[in-house]
Image 1 (cartoon, protein in one colour):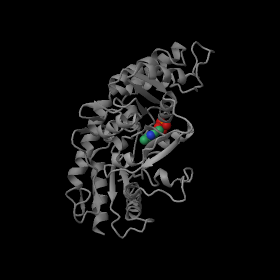
Image 2 (cartoon, rainbow, N blue to C red):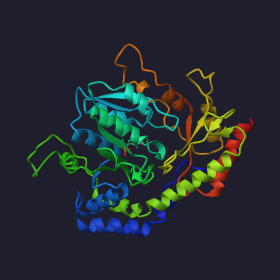
Image 3 (spheres, rainbow, N blue to C red):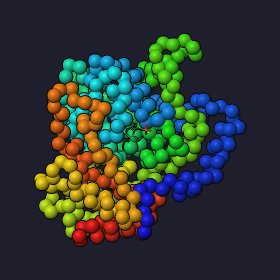
Length: 387
Ligand SMILES: *Cc1c(COP(=O)(O)O)cnc(C)c1O
């Protein structure tokens, strides 16, 4: 059976009348820049993220860039972020003229705060944890570190709208939280768009100004901003889907439970670090609400791993031959990217990030995935382990 990594059609088809209605409403309104549709999505997003302010923007990437700009991050500054993340986290730091300083991760795929602490210098201005794959990073640790060193905090929550930690929503804890509505995210839109959230009035105001060229009033520029606006058409259609976010999350979580239950019954599958485990399952940490943007396995490379090809690559080929959708998020950590040459003569070593990049592979988890499809994924993994 062919199982796609992601199929957006059933989710959107189920809402077609409402989506069409939203499309027609915007067309009839003649308002195509900001306006009430954008304000409405901002209101819904602030409620979902538990923040006072939400600012609709053109992408998750632009949300990060705008947050950094609003905090005045620029040349001479250093911003600490995990190396094991999507490029935008680090790319935006570099685009402001600041230096991304890469920290290692934990086996939960998120920032290792103890390692981040070792990388603080007098130039460190901010820290940007990423809530990767749908589970929040250690925000207590991040906030304690930030308080100690007077750092700004941006939560890259592009993959974690609706996630939580001890009741605190992703994006609501730092100075800014950033979200993406890229189609493959847990609340996927119809193209590129994103959302920036904040609680502080002054920094939210700055971000709002910078979203439209720093102008107030129009044509009078207080700051150099850009055009980072979300489209009303996009906002109106995403608002339709936002009403179903919890239901999508519940279905993702149910799929994760099903995988974990059936996969952990297989010989060679278990929690990372237990004996004879060849495939490690993702885990939910205590107190965290995981929204399962991805279900990410680790095909354990073992101590004999030579740093190049890994057993994960064979597993990927096996799944692909069985027509099981899969993707490697992410094959190369940021500290090893060509565009980020090391500051000194040697590349920093971030062993956990490098190991994760060699071992990780994500399998289908989208809300509309059915049990027969999940069984096909589980059967393929069982067959792989038998060889
Ligand atoms: C997707 C993603 C982004 C960027 O979002 P876009 O909307 O694609 O620009 C940033 N950070 C992380 C962790 C992401 O997964």
